[in-house]
Length: 215
Image (tube, one colour):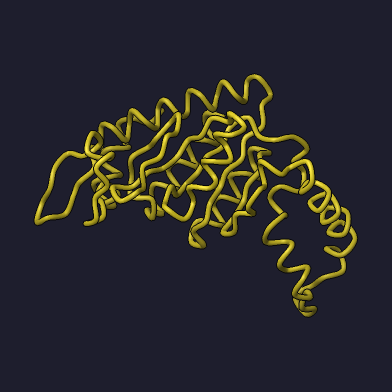
């Protein structure tokens, strides 16, 4: 892993700068404060990233399935590109409640979308505007249309209050979670936390490059 480049990347892009609103459970991952702004410990970020990558590599070696969950529009392109290269599943921008816990029912909708998409996608061009229902289904199901079974690991790029339900679903099914956690992230119990500014585009790109290289 490119461990020597990670600290410099974090400092240069200010990805170690936390949010002013601080969650007590994140104190062990903090380096300190400057002008009332918390700073994440770069070494903790490095350790968390290394542990996560070692685990993900073992999942891949066992032919396990990985799901990347991203809810930030700015990261959508790199997440889709990375997932396509690795042949893994992804969810961009919109999480479907019950995707994990209600997969046995939801998979029929996903497979119906896949069948319809294979028919309609060759027809749709830049000059033809896709109808709303198809556009909505594409945004929700495109990254999971080839998912047959529940994933063996989940990468959650933003662990915020709004996304606690994702972690709760994974916990119920005993699916290990790698989660990028910010200084203001709610108390979460995940197997592989990575303390980082969760809105850092630079770190997202860096992590995706490492995934392609190692997995």
